[in-house]
Length: 175
Image (cartoon, rainbow, N blue to C red; front, side):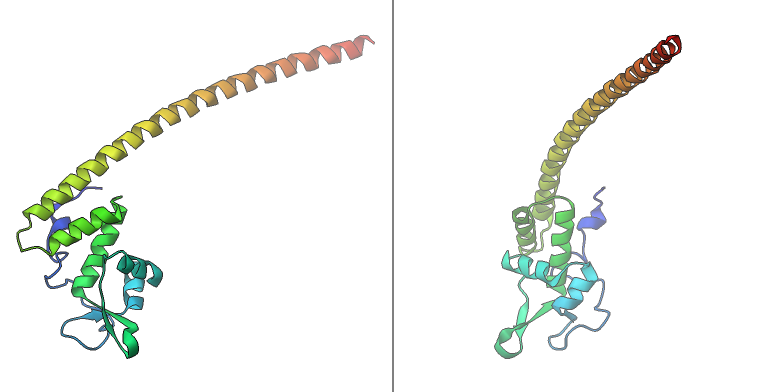
């Protein structure tokens, strides 16, 4: 996957206007588009439980409304944080790495530290993936070697069986 400047640019930046308004209009209430947990779960094809998990991990902090604050209401900023969290997971970042990057977005508007941190995380993840790829290539080479050995043994076995069958039929004919 190639990361382009568009991957890191606004509208994914929290605090910036969101590029996609809620299709259903979201939950009524505060200014700007708002979303329920079910709407976000449907939009991002994840479970509400996953969203609550990200909330428990400090990655999201929705407003609470209703009696006892039982209903979660997510604004555009929270939706963007969820999108960035899911993107980070797809890239193989840990939740701690994702949290650090998201927290950088909460800092002043200077995006250089966020981009530098993101690049550092990507570089580290690339190194891990390259090591894993080397390991996988070595394992595939071993598998290929075992497959060749097994095929050779099967061919030898088939030749032995064929010559053994011919010998047995010759013995039967002699009797």
